Image (cartoon, rainbow, N blue to C red; front, side):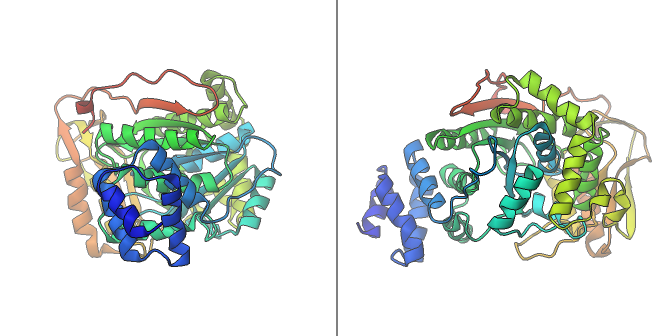
Length: 453
């Protein structure tokens, strides 16, 4: 079959057969399909879309472009978690040790931050000595030893995705739900998991700002997983303001450790426990979410989750003493407070500008090759609903390079909206979607689309 015929078929709005999709993906490695041909197909997909069977076929072909990790030698139901990204979202670092301490093997392949969003790998690398670049043999060894491993994508896992991701970035074809879903799921399903929990963000600080788009992405990923025999649960969660009270790298590791000590902010702890509970149910350790929540909170209370994180740090070359001494993490030279201009209540705190400001300070990336400063970031003292007094700190900027401090300060000032009365409290978890084998539960009641900006 010829690439030009496949491109024409999709351009004309017809569904592609699995064999046609597999041939196009195989053509990446063989050189039989040129870059310009894939670029044309990607644009046709953006305009014409893909149905569920096409998206599943694309995911399957991308998975098979590399190694499908075999973790059958490790007992238990292996479960991972993926977030679509946001500001202050360090739930992976909290929930992975919780689920592992509860008895679920957690093989986690994570990503780096880009733009206004943070990346789990960048945060972990702020721990002195911590290595995320493990090969697959070491990946298995650490999982067997710790019931948990957290690494970056290796060259063997879904290599076609790396090619197509770069191609999409260069051809303005990133914003396609089937392509996003196939990219995420191909990496996750190649890593050897049996189940997956998805945290699909929506709102101002998310890549998918509209609830309808977030719902469509969550549904697409759940359908892919179910079609390939995996149990998948997706929670759609609000990302209108930063999660927790820290945005950066080392500062988010510190907040994660505080959560594992039972001392973290309520919104961050509650979401981490909820996602971990879904993992515990998928892993067969608990029969219901209520039971799983109790199990997860017990691992925090008895210290086993924190101990699991310390073991992981040591196994991946880091300094485990950070769990007892946060001063071992990188620290900034300067701290700059941003004060409240008036008395009142924080009506809103926009997540995206906060993420943008942390990037300007050096905590994030404008490009994939940008250098990260692990010590800098933002500490948020006041968030939505909090009372404020004129002159008190709303937040503190953690600074090493003052070159863009004025710009970052102006952006964060504008991110805060203060009013005379508090805004109504809004739920963090908006919906739950489940697919594939495993326990089901009715979804959280849906708000209307206009409830999420």
